[in-house]
Length: 80
Image (tube, rainbow, N blue to C red; front, side, top):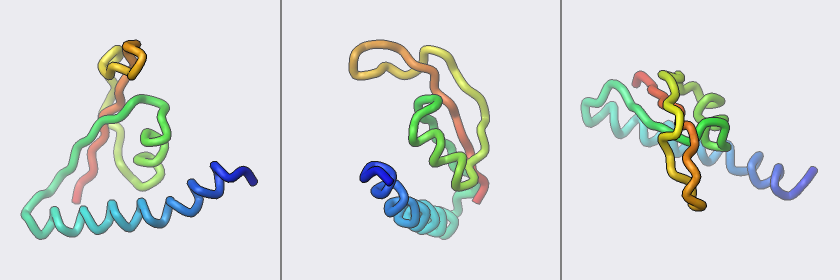
């Protein structure tokens, strides 16, 4: 197992806990739906799918990468 994969495996429960903790705070604040966007096909894209976010759609050439290239963005939502 590579160290990169080990780090990701170790981080997954932390990420899950952070997302769930944030969701609880937002419910307490009266929020009902969260929305976010991320670069399509990225690690974040895979993460949000794996923890139950629903894809709303994607927009081509929406995000500007550090090198100036444009990349597609996927929008997600999650009902609380």
